[in-house]
Length: 182
Image (cartoon, rainbow, N blue to C red):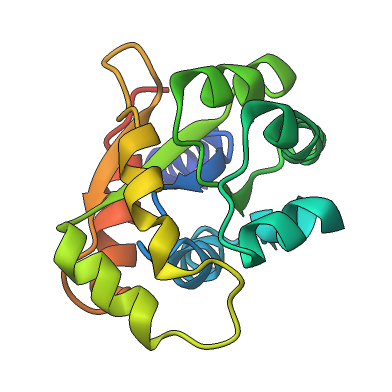
């Protein structure tokens, strides 16, 4: 084996796969981009909505925003999944709108990184209006934007614009994640 072969092999295994939380307000494409990103990274995907207790789904379906007490068990379940994937990699969708929610996820899984899907409200509302079979009504979009606290400089993660096709968004996310420091 030549020296260049050893260098290539060591580069391929040097970076531990991230556990990525795909975050953002409803309608940004977390459920679309999450699986695409997981496939690109070669890791499993978990749908954050699947971690909600039935009471949360019923509340949101009725057009009632969740409060923090509703969210803690949901965030703890996602954090537990992310903790179990530490060192192995994974992608999970989770709105993670507030810093305190992301802090709770990091407390359970300290190495998580965030991909914050961002975009114009009009684009997001249009996407929400055209999706089918989802319990989150467009009426809750205002509360989502009011709650949103974007990633801060001290949080491991990247912001990715949701303009373009799912493949283009995923490509931007992959590139941005590659540029994160280890």
